[in-house]
Length: 386
Image (cartoon, rainbow, N blue to C red):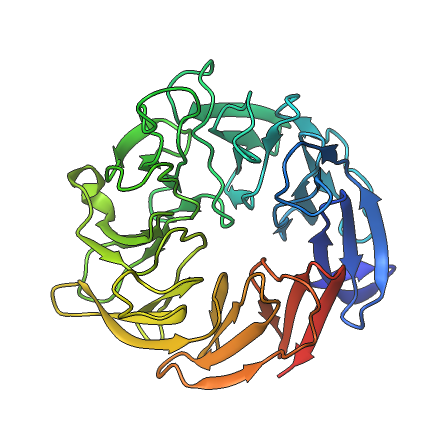
């Protein structure tokens, strides 16, 4: 969402949202569409969506300084659009792939003169080359590329955490989590199924592959960077095998400081950290194997040794993507089609959307100006005043 966009001389708040059929919308807070654009789609032999159509899959990025919206279309291009009209800006789009099986799940990350775009695939269909691309928004070119498998001829190693890559603002370094190789063994060759740290120009600096515990040990997640007072700079990241890893960011290659099994496979999503509560939050769709943690939402506190401990666990039928705002954790229930709100300090249930949404709700909800927004597979953008 962008606040105060100049629309014919009127400051207007706009919500930008894309659909799997390739349409990208600018929607006013009253629910009316200001404009829409067709940014392309692909029909694939993959049932990740009900009708096998894949279009605008990743969240957009609003560039306040440049007054433009960046969004990845379903046609393998990064677009820069006028936020008030949807018109394509001069010099755009920039093509980064012509392979129909390559997809971008991850939200692009903008930092300085870099836009990082992460490439993966649906259903591991090949050919696809898992990589991170650095697009220069000033010169409208692909400036740098890092291949997670070290060779552009190898398939797999996609980066598909919904949050994209994370950037340390103090260094400009890029942190990302990768998936398995396809047709290359072992699946972690050389930086598949790994956490990596790259320079701003995507030069490899450090990495760790925790090792397989199940076949297909993807990281379908984004590293969450944080630093509690008195602790080193750390990150947490989720792995499909049900693990939550805690790393010291400056000693990444030494392996995780802690591994907690928080869910049965498959654990997919992005954790969150709240500076206000100094807690880490994880949503899960299934119980932990020992059933000590139930599906739903779990909060972890950090002790004096900067290790994680369970603070509370609030069960719901399932939990998927979450955000923290104003002392509340909002999270989606995945295929259950419900959005939940719990107290960030105690886990006490506060609210849920009930039967309002009539399809799965997978994307992270967004809270802006006292309104909560979520999109569902019922073809609707939903809003609640809280």
